[in-house]
Amino acid sequence: MSTTLSGNAPGRITVDLDAISANVRALKSMAGSAQVMAVVKGDAYGHGLIPSAQAAVRGGATWLGVAQLDEAIQLRAAGVEVPVLTWLHAPGLDFIPAVEQGIDIGVPAIWELEAVVAAARATGRTARVQLKVDTGLARNGAFGADWTALVEAARPYVAEGAIAVTGVFTHFAYADSPAHPTVRLQQEKFADAVRDCERAGFDLEVRHMSNSAATLTQPEAAWDMVRPGLAVYGLSPVPDLGSPADYGLRPAMTVSANVTVAKRIPAGQGVSYGQTYIAPDETTVVDVPMGYVDGVPRSASSKGPVQIGGQRYTVSGRVCMDQFVVDVGDASVQAGDEVILFGDGSADGPTAQDWAEAAGTISYEIVARMSSRLPRIYVGGDA
Ligand SMILES: *Cc1c(COP(=O)(O)O)cnc(C)c1O
Image (cartoon, rainbow, N blue to C red):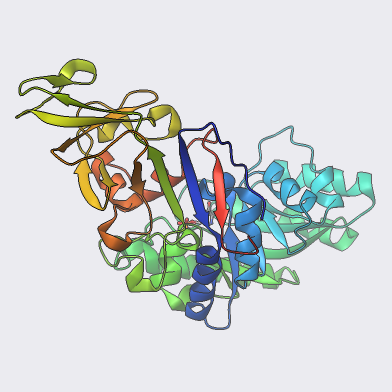
C-alpha cells in the first residue's frame, strides 16, 4: 500500500483504512435506503485525500464530497470514478476541468451559475449542477429571494442543455443539538426548496442535507443521500450524546512520536517556555518532538493527554513549535520510547476528543490541522 513514510520524521500519523471503510458501512446502515457521500474535504480531515477516499468507496460510499474543486480534480487524477460534488468556489475559478471531468458543481449564486454555463458552452458538454439552498445556516447557499431567483435563472440553461440540475442540497446549523428548533425548521425549508426544483422541472438525482450529526441523530432527514464527514473518520460529532463506539464508529487516526531525551530534574525546576510547570518533586521529564507546527495545539499546554508505555500523562508546561515536555515521575521512560498523543481510544489511550477538550475546540480541528509535514502511514485496506 502507498505510504509517504519519511524515516527521518520524529513523529507520524498512522491511518487505519479498514476503520474508514467500516465507519462508512456503519453510516450506510444508519442511512436506510439513502446513499452515502463521504466528505473528504480538507485532505480527508487530515487523513490523506486519496487513500481515505478509496477506503470510503470500499466501505460503500457511492459519492464523494469536497469543498474545493482542486480536491475533486485530484480524486479524478487518482482514478476515482464515483460521482464527486465540490461546493466552495470564488469568482475567477476555471470550471472547464469540472465540466470535462463530470464533477458535480454545487452552485449557491447566479454569478457562479453563469460561470458554469460559460464553461459548459466552451466545452460543448452539459455541466452537472447541484443547487445549494440556505435554509438557515446563513453561510454558503442561496437565501430567500436569491434562492427563488437562482432556480428561475437555471431554467433556461437546463432547457438549452448547458446544465443539468442533478441535485439540491443544504447544510444544518445545529445538527449537533438535535432538539434545537432550527433542526426541524431547516428540514421544512429544505422540503420547500425541493418542491421549487421539482416545479421548475429539474430531473433531480439526489436531495441531501445530513452531515454526520444529522446522519446519527435525524434519520428522517436522510432524503436520497447523507453527507457525513467527521463520522467517516470515526469521531463523534455529538460527544455529549455519544462516543464513537456508541455509534459503532472507530477513530482512524493515531498520532505518535518518539521521545528524544529523558532526564532527571530536581524539585522546583520550571519546565518549557515561561516555566509554567514546576516539578513538584525530583522527577523524570521527557521531550516529545512534536509541536504546534505539527498541529499540536498550544492551547493544550499543561492539559493535553499522552500515553507512554501504557500509562497516561499530561503535557507539562507550554507546547512549543516542534516539541513539548512530559513529566513522567519515576517511570523508566527512555529516549526512543513511543508516545501516543491520540488514537482509537483502546487500552485507555487518549483520543482526538480528549485533545479537543484540552484545547477548547472540537475534534474536527484536532485531526484536520495535523500538519502535512507529518508522514501518513497507511495500514489496512490493501496495505
Ligand atoms: C463539511 C461538510 C459536511 C460534513 O460535515 P460533518 O459535520 O463533518 O459531517 C457536509 N456538507 C457540507 C456542505 C460540508 O461543508
